[in-house]
Length: 306
Image 1 (cartoon, rainbow, N blue to C red):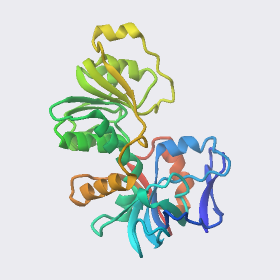
Image 2: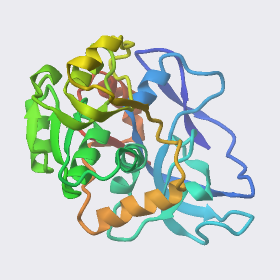
Image 3: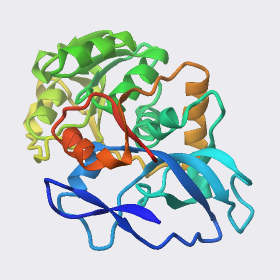
């Protein structure tokens, strides 16, 4: 089969190559990929790819071989899935607990745009606890996670302040329910009950100072790729006795498939709106990757098999 493999070359991060079709484990279904989406974090990993690793975590397509253990979808079923790797290919083996059926009302393009960003947003808000009536500061809100967090949190009754340097993205987030848009975290007024921080570097300590006493900061990313430096005594100027929590979206008590099903249901009901910034065929994958890395794409980049 055809699949994209990393090159380590920034000018052409992946090439289409012939690889062996995957042999599913008993708890895996074989999925024919119709569309996959790209996450910016995957572009970072392509800079120094691990030997033998193939990228691809967000896919939608058709189950063409059911799991041997009888779990998961059976027959020719439309699905969205979240394999840990290998999804940028004609076929991928996906654990059945990381699959859910895709109804006709949700397109494969929408389905492919859901998994990593949607799962992160859903589980992040669960980690934050009840948000009804609470003030929430969201940094690094321009990407897919920020889009979903804003829409889900606002719908749950949170007063969301979203930080984005892009005015167009700010307008979009306001349309999804953000109460306030700021273009620099230093412009956020606070205090906030919850800070959801994804940039690290200099932004994290600034965001921490906007946190209310005994509030919670959940650190779920480091998009700046720069470590943060914190001073113990800064807590006494505002966020005294605050909690800083590290967050990883895979550290959860719920199944990936169940949470994917929730995201698909919300999309089918018109309560969640995956944003697709570019749709193209596989021939343009390398260009799409460099454009995403350089922030020339707003919304999800979804590629379809042609």
